Every structure is written in structure tokens, then in C-alpha cells.
Image (cartoon, rainbow, N blue to C red; front, top):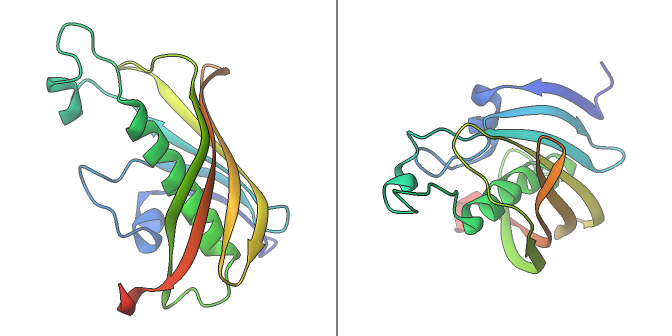
Length: 154
């Protein structure tokens, strides 16, 4: 397989890259990463067992938009991390979110597809355009910026 293209990274691969753990690990699977072209396609399975549904909202469970943005940021962080040079000692940190728009609610049972495309990459970080879709319908979109940091310095 081309080293610039990774397919089907599972949860074990994801937890080697992201420091997040339950309940804040919001990426369940990576379907494809195209490092050369700066793209990633990931997945978040939304279940009624998610702790946030206890309070958001019990009678009308809707996934909080900020958590969908977090899932997009995690997928984007994986892309920025894999695009970087010092993978052993670095981590991609979210530094800003611009033009976020929430287009449709996400409910238990939905599968969110997280698509991120690089707008700019450098040795110091990157900027991505991110969209979350459910059944092909746009749910959330945003632009996000990341900084590359040394894991030991955080």
C-alpha cells in the first residue's frame, strides 16, 4: 500500500494517535486517509448510550453540536498529525474554529461521516475544511486550525 494512503484504521490505531479516551474519544473508525492530497474520512456511531443524552435532551435526544465539532476536530487532528514530520513526539492541537454552521440535528442511531480536507499544512500545523454528514445530508460544517506541539511540553 502507498505510504501516503491509509485505509481502515480501527480504534486501536486511533488511540495510538489521539490522547482522548471515553467519554471524549469521538472517532470510531477511519475509512481512509490520503496524506498526499490532505484528506480523511472517518466515522462516529451515535448511540442512545452516550452519556450526554441524559441531559441533552432526555425527551428529544439530540447530539450537542459542540461534540460534533469535537469529532471533526479529532478527525482533522489525525490528518494534521499524519501529515507532520515528528510523529513520535508530536500532537495536533485545535487552536480555532471558524464559520461553524449547524445544518441538521444528529440523533441516536445516526452514523456521522466526518470528512476533512486540508486547506494549508506547514511544520507548525494546518488548516482544514471539515464537514459532518448523516445519510449524505450535511449536518455540520466548519474550518479548523491546528498547531503541532511536542507531547512532552503540554
